[in-house]
Image (cartoon, rainbow, N blue to C red; front, side, top):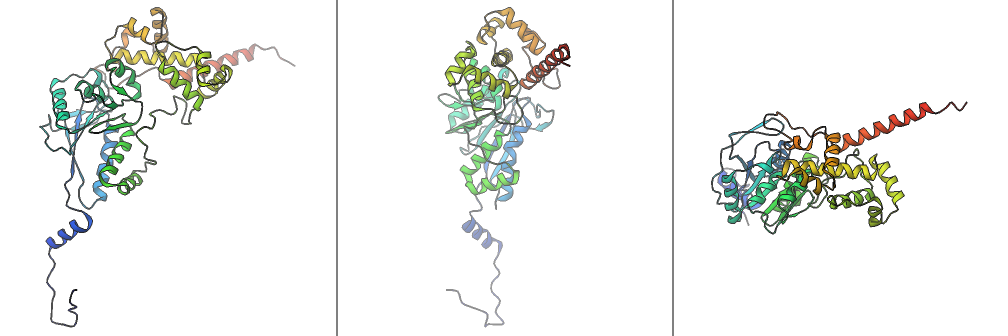
Length: 386
């Protein structure tokens, strides 16, 4: 097809210019395509870890691709310098403009206090862009904002597990699932943390194929890429080992019946094991009894309702399975070292960092110490057998 000019010693072939190579690059390897625009809408005290988890896969996608495939920009309706929950700042471009590109993805980055965040301009902006058909993803607690804007109408969503009960109290009509992320057409949500890796790698796979997503996964050493429906929690406060499925089922059952707690025999019967076996597994796996764990679970539920809703203390006590307000107040103070009325703000505006006392692991460690101390006293009181 092409002539061989090697036998013409004085012939110099024409120089192939840069335009030729650009055309061949586009034709052969698909270069020259437009990068997808990604907008990060930052709320005060957003989660920096989640932001990085969403950013890094896109950065590496650009690094591994012949052309830039993602562009991103930060916007905020609040300040130019936006401070994350860890104290680091990100410079934003101010309020976002109207976005006309239907391929743009908007990530609303929330965290502490998003349940109380109220910015009419942002709500209206999100509502308009949802009507435009632009993809919107609520990250961590930004689900509160997107629900207020009507983004989740007849759509499933997720939110960080620690805030789920408060979200359901405010938006009971929303279909909420405790999983890593959701993709329902143009509406997405992400629970936060490392789930950002899984969501973004899934989106990159949808955009550019499994091979590129796999290479990025290798680069960041994130294996395996978890599916959307993977659970948010695995340990329930007990180290990093996987909790027994019987205990996990019992915990799930108790979580579904917070306001009307089931008895231990009822829980055991429902999951098909004897009460004795359930108690033994709980003691071995969780380091406490079923009743003790149920109490802490209901107190944690009440704490979220205190900071994320306007419900009265008495209403919260009833919603958390306490028949007596005095019993609720006593148990709450004993666990969290504050009265319920003092806990309406988990992170006051004038505090540099959040405080979340009374964690599950601390509760279980405290039980273990008391048990060891009790056994030590009993052993010391035993008469010498010799």
